Image (tube, rainbow, N blue to C red; front, side, top):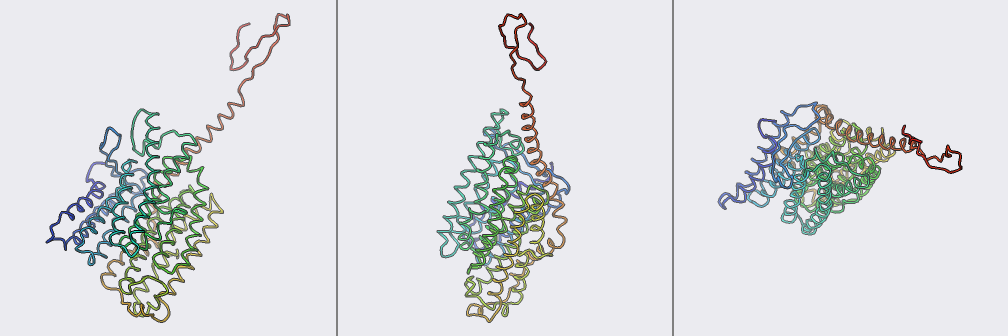
Length: 539
């Protein structure tokens, strides 16, 4: 499409701003936080304009920006947005200004922190918008570097351990992804004679069943670690709890979606047959994650770790919807990614407010916070109920669509997953009761009400929680065409494969058999003559 390069500006502007922040003289260092906030607000403005220009009812990619980059290797600067990626881009555009605003006062003069956040914004935007698989991989890997330094440099007591564990886990997973990408590209080159990493081209690569499954597992290993999904989640409680609040918000609300987005965008597009074959395994892991995450969350004494395990359960719903392979299930999966990002970010911001006042987020040391901070308690209640999935709030919409879409094709997985909804109410309400009810403890007595700055941070998130819960139609209208196209692609490939197998079976059952005929000369000698296919050897 000709016109303003929305996508390129969204991707490139933050990293250019990061370089400028690094080069700021010492006399201007105190303005680095304000500069980061202004840049992120500008990116949010461009993203909003992109959303306005986005045409609903269109299934394909829009505002495509495609330019040759490394021609010898077939890598191109290929960006595009559709209904699946649109709201994830808007989620990134919304949360980074909130993070800058919420931490601006404390980190206003910290150039390193501001620069790494801006680099991270570029990496997240590029990952959600890349249509070249190698370009996606570069942005996907770039996210590791800034979040590693954010955790290790500005985290809490065990930050070094958490940062290294996060980096090693995700880096090892990405090694499988790189091998998978190169293998698909080489196979495609052998078939067509063209070396390319464009998703649209690679999605038509013909793979054998075994090769498709192996490549599917290689891609999914990286995405499962990044999300994280059970049993690849063990790095996340440490990283979420030891990161600074801004880092926790980005990790849980944005970076976790890179994994589930990768599954939907690349696994289902590149390996549709393998996705159908491996669906029972992924559905089982998703359901285990839902139940396991809920049970472990109920036993936590640390609010941040509780939210970490709660995220594991909600990400299980996203995987469940993706591999139900129905329009309702996949639409629910996509909108749940958006909704989970909103209320999880709000939960971590609220926990940060509690920590700033009491210097702890240990549940046994917090009690009676509702009395000194009733407004904060009310906001926490709304966000908590959204996380539980109360009808009328945004958490309900995605989970409902996922369960409906899964029940249509994978009934028993949906039934077991529904138990997770009940368990989420148990651990969230119990945690709320222990923290906000009762007589204020020593730490609770230090609690203060939300400030105007806190209110400004929370207002857009709470508004979206309510609006998306009551009227999700405009979002679903833009998601559904892209989802229908993807589901059709998966089913079409599977149907073609089944028909080909059936045709081969029918053909083999009609193969003519050789027959021994007596010689017409009557001499008793025999000769062998093939009969069939309408051809006859002359006597």
